[in-house]
Length: 109
Image (cartoon, rainbow, N blue to C red; front, top):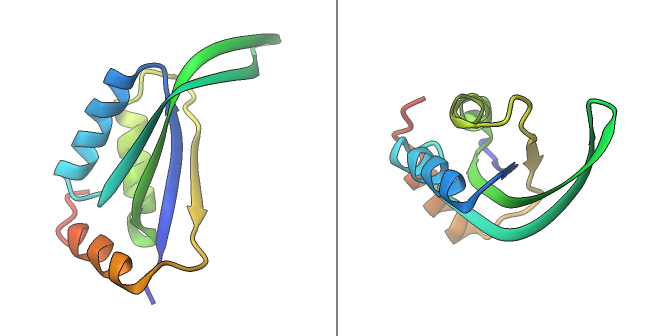
């Protein structure tokens, strides 16, 4: 049985996140993306602790499209090593799940 997943990623700007999110929806790889600006990230990169402002994107899609979403995000992303985390969903309201599947039915991977 097909399941829904969230794909979590971050972007350096809201503009880049919106452009990527629109492309994912236009290609029917996602039913919806949520973009949350204003995040501060602390992380180790190349031996140094870095601090940056980022934008979170949560991509709502089918599990069977997760790899295509991952590839599309990586292709459009300005980071050389973007965070792309696929999170399985334990339970989704039936009406919402039906909408998500309908919106991603014609995916152009």
